[in-house]
Length: 572
Image (cartoon, rainbow, N blue to C red; front, side, top):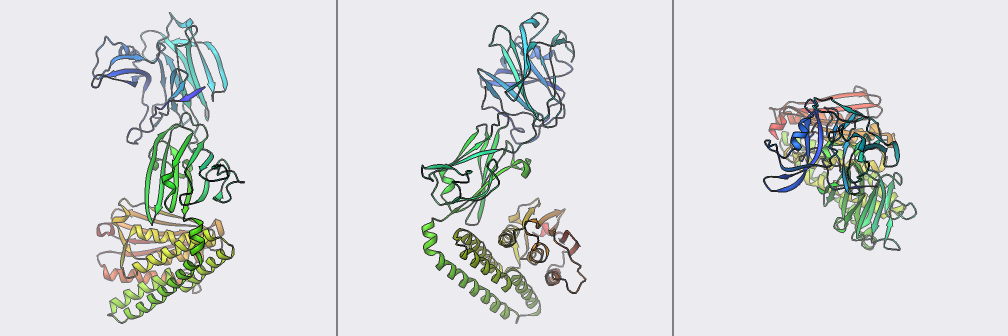
C-alpha cells in the first residue's frame, strides 16, 4: 500500500511556473555545508552528458555548490526524463513501506523515460522491474530489466527501464534487487488531467441526535442544506445557527499525488476577507475549526490543487458555501417586529429622499441638473415598482413560512437601501462599494427571477483606489434584468465588467436576452438609456478633461452596453 509522505512542490516556492528542461532527474540525500543539515535533493543532469550523475554522486570529487556526503536514494540510481517544456510537474511524494517514491504530474500526455545508472552489465541479472496501474493492476509483472543502453552520452552501459505513456492513468514503475528487498526504487507518474477535488463526505460536529452527522445524506441534512448538487459534489449552500457547530470535517476522495490548498472567503458585517487555511495538505480529511462558525455572515471554502488560487479556473476549484445566521429563538421573537420596522424605515427613507430631492431642484442650474440626475439614478435604484415587488417577494416568503430566506432577502434589501441613502449626496463613489451595491441588487433580482450573473473586475489597480460616478451602471443593470432576461429564468445571464485600457476605464453590462432596437419608440429600455446619456453629458461638463462615451451593441441573444471614460485611471 502507498501512503502519502509530507513532501511536495506545486509551482515554485512563490507560486511561479517552472519547466523540466533537457535533463534527467535523480533523487538523493546530501548535507548542506552551511547548516550541516541533511536534506533531500533533486540532481539534474543534462541528457547529453548523463555520466555526470556519477561524478555528482562521487563524494571524492569536489564541485562548486556541491553538498557533503551525497548518497543516492538507492544503489539503483533511478532517473527520469520528461518533455523539456512540461511545466509544474512536481507533486507529492508517496511512502511505499520504508521507501519514498517521487511522483510527477504529466497533464499534457507526453512521455516519461526511466533509466537506472546503478545497473550495468555486471549486476543486470540481479534486478527486476514492474509497472502497476492505480495501485491495483499489474500491467507488467516482475520482469528482467529490458536492456542496457549507451544513449545520452554515456561512457559505460546503463539500464534502460523504458519509455512510458498512459494517458489519464496513474502508474508506478518500480525496480528492485531480486534477493535484497530493501534495495528498491520507483516513480509514480500521473497523467490524469482532472484537478478538481472530489468531496465524499461532510461531517458536522455538535448537531444531530448523536452529536455529529453527514451533511451530504439527504435524510439528515434537510435543516441545514439549502441546495445540493449530489452526494459526491459540493453543496451549493448550507446554513447553520451561530455557535451551533463544534467544527466541520471534509472528506475527499484519495489524492495521493496531488496536494491541496484550502482557502476561506468570509463576509461579516459587509467586510470581506480571505483566509489561507492550508497551503499544502495531502490528507484525505480536513477539519474546519469552531472559530469559523461563531460569527453571523457568509462563508465559502475553496479547495484546489496546491498553488496560488489565481492559477486555476472554476472548473478546477471545489467550492463549499455556508451561511451563519442568528439562533432561531432570537429570529422568531423579533421577526415580525423587525419586518414592520424595516418596511416602515424603507418607506420613510424613500419619501424623505424624494422630498430632499425636490428641495435641491431650487439651486442653480448646474446643481439642479446634477441633483435631478442623482434623483433619477436613485429612482432607478429604488423606484416604487422595485420596492413593491420586493415587499411582495417578502410577503410570499412569509406565507411560505420561510423566515431564514426572508431574513436573508431583508438583509440584502436593507443593505442596498442603506447604502443608497448614504451615497445619495455623493457625485463619486469608490469602485469596491459600487460593485457591492450591484452585487446586492443582482442577488435580490436573482431570488425573484432565478437568473445568473457575474461581476468581473479586471482593473490593474485596487478597487478601493478608483472612484466612479455613483450609480452610473444601475439603470443599465436594471434594464438588463427587467427587459433582457426576466423571462428566461435560470437560462438568463448578466455580466458586469470593469476593465482598463491604458489609462482609460471601460464599464460594460452584457445580457443574453432578446435584444432591442434603440431607435424603436416602443423600446422598454429607452428611459434607462436616456437617463445614462444625460448623466454622461453632465459629467462631461463637470470634467471637460475626460471623454465620456457610450456604445451599444444589441441583437437577439446578446446585448452589450459599454461606457468608456478616457484618462480616468490617472484621475482616480
